[in-house]
Image (cartoon, rainbow, N blue to C red; front, top):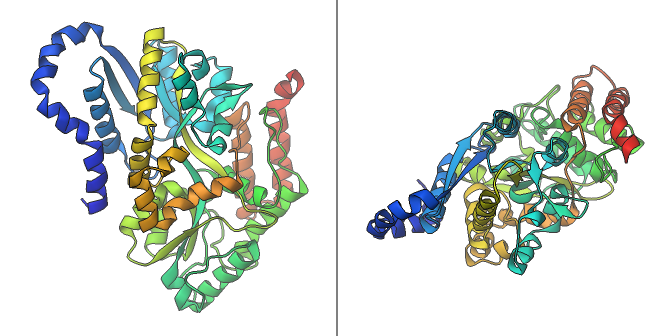
Length: 439
């Protein structure tokens, strides 16, 4: 266990030490609290940026020590898609959870299935309303619709550029200067590939797992937004989107800076750590793991630009499920407020690399000192100024799958970028036709 982890765990574990010191009191109160205790079930995705079950278990234990009238059972359900499926299956079986962390982009599907309630309908005090307004606006874009808040940001991210400073220096590049533009990224990537004698790739952008997310970044950097705010229309075959995909393809075909074909999301972090590539695009949620595991000096930067800087936000929000009692909903809000407290959000950010979800988190002594010691921890936050909401629509699974397939077809050479995106547009239009008519 490294020193940083010990420091963070020390902060998370204070409640457990207090709990041990007052164990007799808790046991004495147990008989009184047992019947009054509100029980919550939390579905939580763990297959994102490494196993986080131990950290969540520590947080739940601390919360329960501070709130003996509320118990929380955390159920770890795999990745985000797995978690959504398990949560919806539980609802259908009459065993609905009270809350869950699911993709921020699941909002439209959850609303369509009438599975969630807004936080506005549950909160009661001015203090709670201030809490709803305390998060970064850019992280709230995927959690609000029609003036109501349905998702509270927790495990949130943007895409960032990681670069290997040693590899840059070996290629004759300034190790302290990452690419600012698309052109520079292609040139620097090609320089690394050439200097290494073909032993190291210049850049890798993952195209499995979440290809739509990476493509959305390219499109937004080219000045194009892929969808409307209502979630009823997408604009995949716009000339700016086609140009963005053509550039992505050119990194391999023209510049020979990136491997042909698809690049695996799940193994890319290890590829970077092992030196297979000098640059990678990946979630900021990998930041702490890269810091702990890389044996070379590395940097983190905002993504390069064409017409503008930009990255879609990503990650998970807390949701409240409809099939729960008023008492359970109130207890769930208590838990979510506790989890997103600035001090706790700061510790979570340090431990995982995910963002502190509120300005107040970055004003805490812990995160302020950490950013001063390790400036890459602020990159994802700073990039929010250039952020956009993640691709989210009705029929989200079908729409994203159409775009994923198009991206992969272009990268593998099965179709041109234009052909692939026109096909994705047609498929998305078919999926969204009834929603576009009804708005």
